[in-house]
Image (cartoon, rainbow, N blue to C red; front, side, top):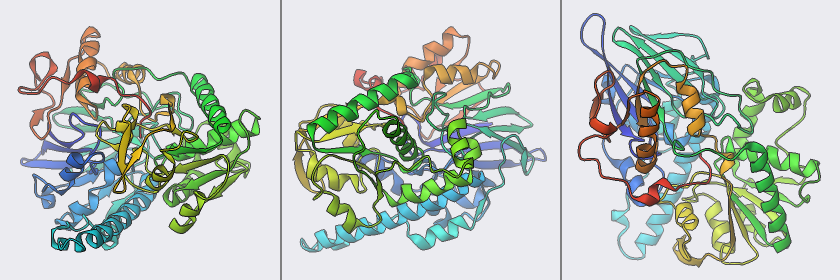
Length: 491
């Protein structure tokens, strides 16, 4: 039972794990768990153009844990390069993945055209790389989706048994119990925060021989949900007093819906003023419809509101912004307003347009509710950059910056330990975390009598083997101290 992590190894993006298992009748089976896009700075995103170190035609199947772009965003590339097998997932993941991938293709094509126009003025248009994929590639990919995963039901892929369970991260998210002749493996995908504003808690896992677990926040504990609400409320009140725009960068799935639900609750209770709320994310608007379809995954108050025919995601002052032209007109609106726009790490999307127009104003508030990769625009702002480059221009950072970490859709250290507490004494393999965070988690596991190992990038590991001395692969550099200090959110 071997694994190559081709994304989300010593980083929190680009999740892709190639499992190789011995078949009962001889030979091997290859399963790909997730096929995500790298998001963040230029160095990370350049990895999206690297060739797959395997033949996509050799894969038995792809299994998706959930529909975030960093877990599904390279699927169309896989299909372009020859994969024609099934892509198993839950029904909500299938619906959301189509929305996510179509949006990704559109943004790539638009970005390519803009880059070509700029490069043409310098005679360098031939140097602009093409989009990774286009809408036609997405349609071919969607045709391969098999929404046959049901929480608690076992699916057979050849002689391998796969049982998904609720992960509590976003709508449709699952962790996977994978059983073969070699043993029992749990692939966590992304696990949810047990104080989530929307999702039910993850289902406790059964005993396993090995667990591959995400570690986004394995070195910290989130602020309690009541404290998070109070922090968010106070940030909004202070921002309204400043009189400017309140910018909330947000991922379109789960985070946008959580913020909309929270804004409605706070406004209805009179906790914050009823100022205009602009949802400037067509993808978030489309994704929200799936929350009505699959509301049984949500916490009781939200589920009850949906059953009563109410819309728990619509503050009374909400305006959905469908077009780019209307998005630009928001900046001419006079007075305080909340602008909720993608994307969460500010690496693209409509939020960049609003940052360019407002980040330099002392009356602006930037409320960060999502994880910020160290190399992303959001990460640089969190670190205190005085000026950042946005859409080709240097923009001063004079806005009031608020970081609200408790909205995270990711498990914190306490959640991860609670998840592992029912899994027996498995060998624990760490992925989907910054190196410094994982280094801090290994001794925590050791004190609990669990062997923890950091998964190296691209190198094959034997999931049932002895692992590495001190939990570190040979040659792995020591993390910088600053890498252990990330806060603000989770995708």
